[in-house]
Length: 331
Image 1 (tube, one colour):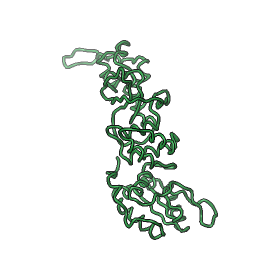
Image 2 (tube, helix red, strand yellow; image 1 turned 30 degrees about the horizontal axis):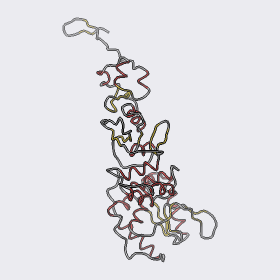
Image 3 (cartoon, one colour; image 1 turned 30 degrees about the vertical axis):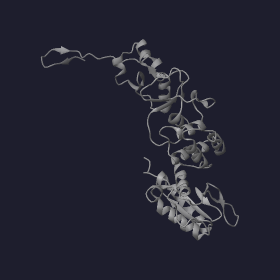
Image 4 (cartoon, helix red, strand yellow; image 1 turned 90 degrees about the vertical axis):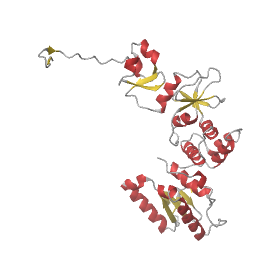
């Protein structure tokens, strides 16, 4: 439509046609050279229709930022034979990690090159490479070992959290992990073995791992994890507490935020706690504050109950071994 300007003249605005993105560039990450070959200029790549993932590698702006996308982007610029490892492998295996950034790949020694945003490792992998949805990455056991032995290793608690989650997802069994790290030598081998020795089956969440490790690192008896318990009169299943001492009839439950906000969950929790107490169980209900803000009080409560229930060979007080591994609550 013509527009009348202040000088009284009629002008027709020029509408710049929107670039039709070549379909080849909509399938995933692509290199700058590929875009130029298809007629897409460097100026257009800097515009709103695209975003840069790595130096010289772009994706459509609407593409979600996932570890799979970043893996595919890195493979365009890394040497042939490069394999996702360390943190990136853990993310691809969908294992829990503390917050961090950057891509990690183990690359062939020959042809190694540095790429901005990618940390390269050159350790030999042997048979420790697997394919997951067509992407090459280190095996779950090797990923655990690498994260224990890296220059900035995962802490003990975070490493056990990762191991517990891997067992829950049936990526390996605790015995398989212990056998694997037993063959490690050099940096991180003791750290990996200590963490692997603490990995357990049936763990439902990272916070269950944290709560169990708080108890164990304080020198108190290790509780069982998610065992089914039954009414004392044998009438049927009663509950499956997060942590428990079956012989002493002490149950420890971790209540996450959803236990408070989900009304049905809250009702179930209250009913289960009442049934356990009516059947002679002592129940400790813990929240994140009990684990992070007042762990010493939580340990003292548990020690008092263990003493009251006649637990044998208890220390006079909870130890301080947990303190060096404890920090602020993760975001």
